[in-house]
Image (cartoon, rainbow, N blue to C red; front, side, top):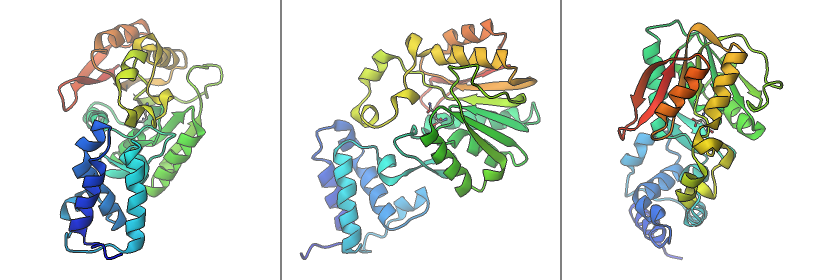
Amino acid sequence: NNKSLKIKDVLKETRDKLNTCSNKSIVDSSDLDSRLLVSDLLGFQDSKSILLLNRKQEIDSQQYEKLQSFINKRLQSEPISYILGYKYFWKHKFNCNSSTLIPRPDSEILIETILELKNEIDIKRVLDLGTGTGCLLLSVLDEIKDSQGFGIDQSNDALDVAKQNSIDLQLSTRSTFINANWNDINQFPVLEPFDIIISNPPYISFDEYNTLNDTVKKFEPKSALIAKENGLQDYRIIGSLIRSRKLLNPNGFIVFEIGKDQHLDIENIMKDFGFTLYLSKKDLSGIIRCLIFK
Ligand code: GLN
């Protein structure tokens, strides 16, 4: 056919197709998403280049076909990060797939906070409970050059993704990934104490989960999102695990990501295990998103 394959026209056509979707959230992000998809076809290596698309450049018919398969997936509500197979987080690109949560910009506050804690404590050993893509652990290891990290996850498929990320970021010699479930303390590996324990555990209640849109519900792993006891159960389990296994150095810190309005409950839970709140941090939309315990 004599379709024009100029970027300018391809972008417009992609956006128009995405705008026919019945899922409003797909329509809402059609402009950015069409640029993300097209820049991926052109092999752009960083997030800034999507803004610098040369609109006169053309794509070939093979790239055009690939784009059509991307668009069809997106019209089925598949998250853009799973379609592309990666998401940018902090300073790097992280592989992700349906066995891992997609890294969220809100979680970057944990990295920022840990870099502040560097003034308080020499950070040598870092533990990430529920590592998923490894985005938190690997971003910390990348920032703190002489640190060593352990990432735990119940999913071997997620650990495969995390290991690949550690290789891509040249952090594999400083990171160890272990398959374990914090629900079974007896099976949990015995580890030396850590200076920093990070966790972004599942914290969404069943009720809140039902209000999320299909892009999340149909594709992202439920086990990474939902927690019992109104979203609080995993904090209790983790608090108990850290205490009974003596996972934290006496001068170390626990850095949690938390859900909206959970900070008082979690402060109380952690108090029961002997940990006191040291600092709390708000995310970009003003919600208390990060709690640090000593
Ligand atoms: N640590 C990973 C992240 O923050 C995964 C968290 C999870 O699966 N709950 O993205």
